[in-house]
Every structure is written in structure tokens, then in C-alpha cells.
Length: 263
Image (cartoon, rainbow, N blue to C red; front, side, top):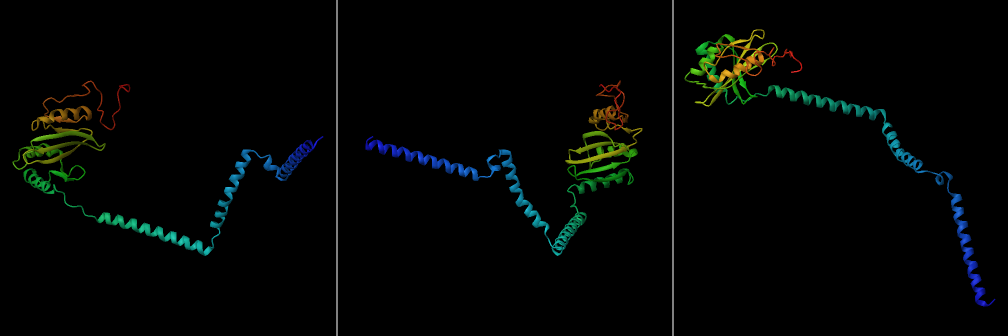
């Protein structure tokens, strides 16, 4: 064996010795690690992380509950004071709202004018009430007694200072305790509106027709008769225009029960 072969054998032996030493060191590291970490699965690892994150929260909660009696009393007193102040502010706001005075409506002079003429023409006891309807464009509104309904309508149509020549709307409503007819009139000459309301006996709702004063009242009165059963005396041709004469009952009454439930 020559010198080259001898050197080669020495190198191979050194390489093998290094591999053996490295293997021994790896085995020693594995033996030192805890068994539970070597054998742990992903679920156990997740649970351990959750427990670690919960620990600080528990510590914070423990600190919050660790309050002296004096401090707890001070906190309770501060909360009670804040609640009392809030209650006082709410009560004050309600009082201010009650004391708030509404500004006069721009249509108040119109209403005053109407009332003056109505009282002069048909008496001070002709109306049950009158007001400005702020929820409906501040329209002047009067509620007339049933026996003065047609006379009032005549005055509104023919009086020189009123001249309500256009009937905009007429309909009926069932309020359970009574029926009501609603009439919206407009004076084209003066560009002025008025609403007339009249309450009727629900068991026998009868009222004079306005068709002789405004032809536009013809069909709305027929509709109110058809759906609510309101009778309009002296109407030129009162009939059912939607349901037909064979229909039983009046669908817009609150106590209406369909005769044929399949219809």
C-alpha cells in the first residue's frame, strides 16, 4: 500500500467519525425534549395557545374586581349623579317643548275670514270646530253640524267673497264611532282652499248630496255609497259604480265581513 492509499483511508475514517458524532448529538437533543411536545398533535397545540391567551384576560378581570369599598362607593355615586343629570335634562327638554309657541299660520287670516262670513250667514252655532291643518299644507278646516251641511256648502259656493267653484275631492271614512264625509273645495278666483268635514251617525249615515252645487260630486258620492253605504239625499243617480248592486255589504266599513271569502 503506497502513501496515497494510506492518506485516502485516513480521510474516509475522519469523515465516518464526524457522521457518528453528529448522529449522537442529534439523539441527545431529542432525548432532552419533553415527551408531550414530541407527541403533541395540532389540536392540543391550539388548545394550549388558547389557554395562554386567556390567562392575561383573567388577570385583568381579577384587577378590576380588586377595588376598595371607598372607590366602589365613589363610582356608584358618580353614576347616580350622571343618571340624575340626564333625567333633569330630559324633563327640561319636555317642558321647553310644551312651552314652545307655534307661529301663526300664513293661512290664519283666511280661516278668520271664513268663520266671520259663516257665522254671519248661517249662525254662530253652525260649526262644531275649526282649525288650521298644519299637517296638510295649513289648509283652513271647518267641521260643520250635519243639519247645516248643505246650507254651508251653498254659502261657500255662492258668497261673493268666497266663490268656492271647484270641488277637488270628496270621500267618506269609517271611524268606528261615526262616519265622516270630507270635502275639499277651492276658489279659483281667489286661489284659496277650504276643507269641510261632517260627522254622521254610523248606523244610518245620511247626508244631502252636493251634486246640485258641484257636478264633480256625482261620482265621489256614488263611490262613498258603494264602499261605505253613505246615503246622499237628492243625488241624481245614486248607484254602486265599483261592485254592482248585487254585492252584499260595504268593504270599507271596519266591521265588513266578506259574503264570499273566495272573492
